[in-house]
Length: 403
Image (cartoon, rainbow, N blue to C red):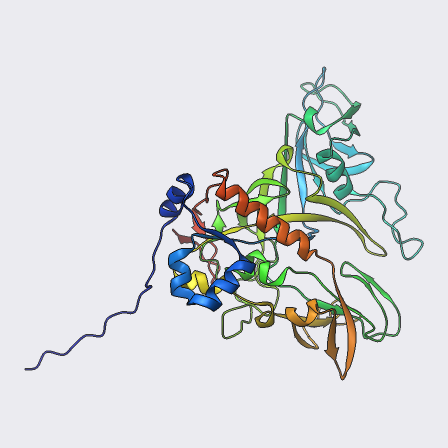
């Protein structure tokens, strides 16, 4: 009987652990590149060689992220109050938590805002602007009302406060960092006012919102290194991934390289608001739509093997956004798309659609995304920032997976 040869399982040629990489960071030996720089290295030396040389790749994005907000504890007055309703600069915060805790949503509007009664509304101020004012060190007005109880007898509270006056204040964003997003157009005969900006009639312009090749979740499309406990750059300070985000889609359509061509995954994020900076949390007004918060987000990607090296070398020309009509298909939720367009084409400032060229403009800032990736790179090189190993990952199947 002739013994048959068994075929060896093909495994990675380079393997590292979080502990390996963190030890190199603490010794000042870690090699850190931005996702832009990694593209060139992988092109020059290949994924295996790049994986052996590089420890961390940094990413970044800066754009409007509506599903954001802050938990604020404003401390007990004397006598105590159970705040039933709370306002910050006349913007309502949710008080149905406990005593003097409140959640301020980024898209909340002041009580006296006319909204879209005179269309299109201007929306000059909202929850996002309050958050920006707080991190900028500005004074705001806090008001609270209560029905009064034996243990919390006060019924009214009004005072001027700054961020430093809050015993606790932390940013908690239920949905940030969309893995991919729509390119918005308007096929109708009238101007449309949307969260993707103003869209002129008859497909006269296209708006998009992503850092493309620098975007965090496009550099780890299968969530191999991103999960609960991942340490991140958030709003100019350190934050963490706390869970997958709302509207998380773990099984989007993908290219042959595994890159999502639809919305894909999202992240819920948390961080200490008192560490953050006004440059990286900015209130924005969208005419005819409402208010949003521009959030600076950066995620370090550990290069555990050559597969991660290949993922972090993704180029704009290999990343595609779905083109969606915001006059009908988006508001009616038809699920229809007009086509796809690469981020390379979008970033050129014009796209071809239905036989003609139309101008394309970003809502996100690529230059700010580069700045975030460079800042995170600098933090790691200076031993200020270690990688947070996720306690469990967010795999494409959406099931809990222990690390």
